[in-house]
Image 1: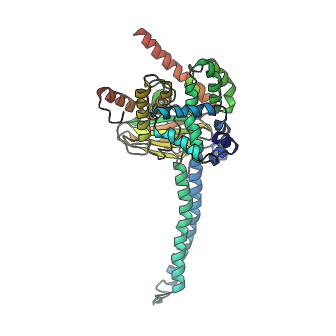
Image 2: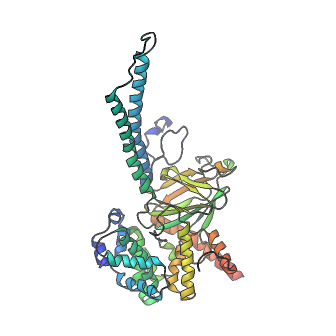
Image 3: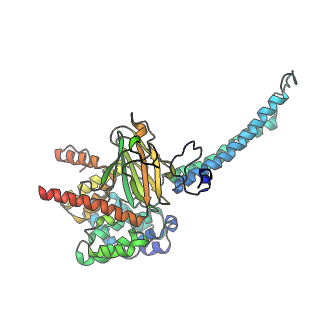
Length: 266
Length: 196
């Protein structure tokens, strides 16, 4: 296919693309809500822009000094003053209501999550802990996620966005992500999932998401965390939930048997 | 009463939710778990949450509120723990697995759990439930409270008491491993700041 017809494809866009102006495609109801709110607000924004531009251009046109050297001296008009006070105070209300509705619904944990994943920010990599399957305080499924250096990239991989170990989550399942750092403030942000959560030392921030379709979602650190801030990307891979079960047990069993062998040797 | 009413008239959240979770308000293991929840209350060692949810159910028996769904999720783990003996284990655990798994792979999970309920806990998709004491984004205290609850439970019931397992599961799900290691160290040194 010629690349100029590439825009006709309907493959969802879950990573940043060059010169991108719009949003990445939504994969969670949260992101869908954010995009819808953006469009709602843009309606009012364009309305105001057109109206104010008209007043401005009209004033410049009619009161231009060669055309109208002595400006009119209108100092008072009750009707127009009432109108220009009331309408601008109603418009923010129309913006605020959907905005607050979205804000509070994003915060709310509606149902009990099925999985808790801990995303721990480090300088400069991320550690993910899947501790739902632990039978002791020993971590059974923990891995570090480092960025892939530019020299090691393979064809088709995105620069500064790929990591060696992706976070694997089941699709269409309610997830709880606990975001915390181990050193300085970090942030866990994935645009397609509508998530941007700061990681504050000594504090566990919870975000509740439900990825609606399988795919690979990219994000970057969004809090200046040091020199390699630009090199701590986030990659979330959503798989069907039955594949998730086998994937987790495959990752778990080698580790636990490895530990058992180590104990045997001791 | 509440158990009988809630499956017939699910709350709004349950109505909008995907099928497999809705089965959580299954009437199956409910009577046993109700009894189970009251036991720790008599022993006066459990935290306020379980008691509160039990009271809430007594008072608001018919109306379906968030507490009703909270109660069902809060009270489900004891039913599972209570059945530690292998005879009564298989049916209850499998029903639990049905609620937790997606409908696609219920059958194979069912068989797997009946064969070895304790060996394959990693397949089960379950974690610490949403706790109405900690409704905010900040879950630091949720993790801390669960950790304290577990160790108070162990102190009261003795080491390896099966009713404490759920608290262990909860705090392991919520707390970063680093925090747990630090707190374990502090407990050994007697410098743990929490009420143990």
